[in-house]
Image (tube, rainbow, N blue to C red):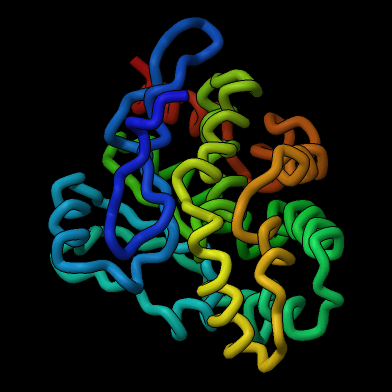
Length: 255
């Protein structure tokens, strides 16, 4: 696995380039155009300088409004020209926080929640709207950053769809997805994340129960892609993408 994709930042988790994969016909996805990460609320000045150097023109924030309000992105010196986000999340708070507040927190219950979330996310209309906007915007070939809170679930689903649409085989799509487990030091983060979520929810949380929520498992992405069915049909019926849209994507990002 090529860990040069990971861009180490001080205040942002899971920032990486998800270009550079091979298509099924042996061509390359352009590097330096496709980036993914966790939220940007804790960027340091050094982080912002590094991100500025990527030349980002588009930001896609997949978080719902309450998440953005609680942890607004710090975009000083980055200033993308185009920002895609949803104005409707369908929930008064992020679904994972609602689950953590009321759920029976064990590793198995959290895994079950994550499987359900991956089945839900690609079928929600507010996600589909942003997904479609991102696909069409990518046809201009300019650098784009897509992120959510941790940069692994909502972002992971969209990144997998983009790579699949570009003709990357399933094994490499999953390899990119699973790179989260190397990009993020989950063992170190578990105690502090558990403490922060416990403060937000008012409920005690055993850190180890959160492991499935902080990392990724192949079964999660498989649940999402099984729910969508064949992606060519999903792109057309759920995202409203035409064959011209997909050809433009190929022309912009494959060499």
